[in-house]
Length: 165
Figure 1 (spheres, one colour):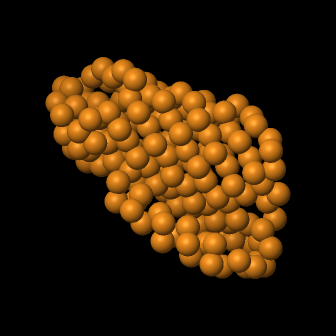
Figure 2 (cartoon, rainbow, N blue to C red):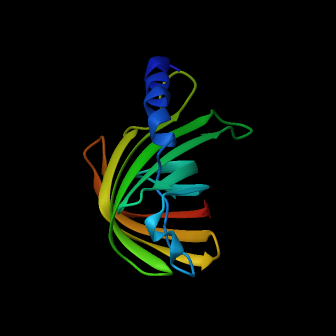
Figure 3 (cartoon, helix red, strand yellow):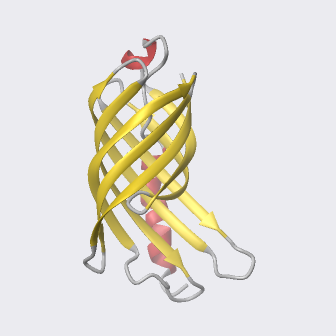
């Protein structure tokens, strides 16, 4: 890896995010709205990264999410993904919530040099989170994603989480 200090800096800066990340606060009974809620799951998207994610939803309308992915395929170099996301609830019910989201991520693939031409990404757009069954929520998002090479694309993101009420 050519710039290991970049990966180390991102990991260190991500620690506070992992202690406060995004979560849906809906339940069938609607009792979780006044509480802080934590969740663990999987998130995938070009704006927030791909990997295991930790979510936190505050007592108010703000949510934060940290995403970390490290994959080592058998015959290729290791893939790293680091991401963070902020969400602001626009409206919510007992089984769904809709929000504005902003996310950023860094992708790395290679042994010494990053193979990605645009490793840094930033996205902003709208999303919805839906209750599948007690504690399990699915999130769909459509974010306009800016890549560090100047490309801007409207791209989807998907995640599934289990929340600890």
